[in-house]
Length: 111
Length: 116
Image 1 (cartoon, rainbow over the protein chains, first blue to last red):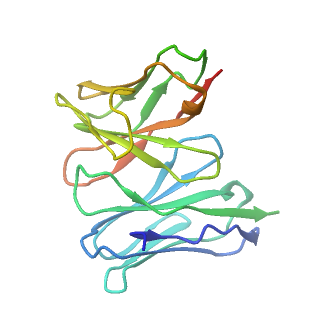
Image 2 (image 1 turned 135 degrees about the horizontal axis):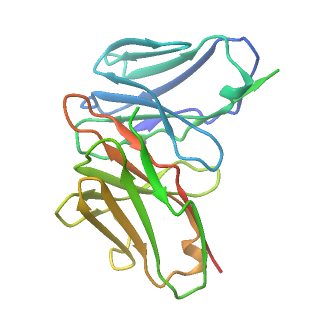
Image 3 (image 1 turned 120 degrees about the vertical axis):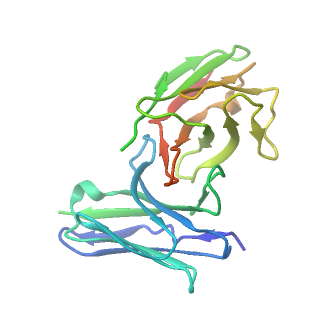
């Protein structure tokens, strides 16, 4: 079993929809959680960072971490065609350690 | 957010030559930088962890004599692909970790290497 599981999609939604992206993990030591957005042929862009459990909101994006269930989510409200990209979850147990990535979910928001 | 740059953004080289890729943290100091490669429609694959002033730590299966990493300062790490071959063609991405209370990693825009 991989340490981080993420459904690769593709996920297609109409413009304006609420998008829910999820990852599960097996390592209970993970305490740093991040979501990245990656456009084709570009480097990943950090969207959200969460330490330990809880929710974090930034504009149209909300990140949730449930450590008891080993489950993290990213919600995108009022989705736009420009949100079409691959979304990667990433996590780590310690500072200075490499991130453990999910495979990425491909999202397509149609006008 | 913090900015990480990479140079060059793309490079074409002939088989047998060496290529150097630079990764810079522009507005913060990074004790630790990471190097990844990514094949089309696949996730990032960690190649090595680079700590300023010390030798890089390579992942299993990554040839350290082929992929030379130097982290000479808190804002610069370089990856040199030596004696490149067509199978080394890939998208190489670096990331840099911010220091302090929050542990965040910021990625560079990537370097597309094509070996002919």
